[in-house]
Image (cartoon, rainbow, N blue to C red; front, side, top):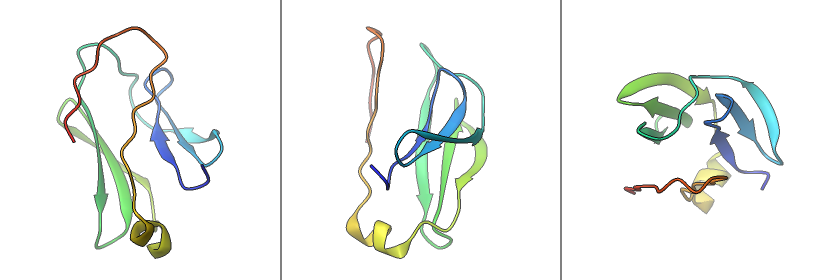
Length: 87
């Protein structure tokens, strides 16, 4: 989806749109880690946290149209590892 924003645990990279890697971002993550994602509405920036540590802003100036249209949390998994999700 052209309006998707993601942080991959297998390589620590940011992705946007149609699977396009944007940049290296943070640590790899996997079983036992806690990862969070947030939107700072006042600046329209998306950020991630890893095990309680703020990793910095990942995406800047998200379009107001995208925010008004709604952002929906999604978790993609390519493993048989159980997940605990809290939205």
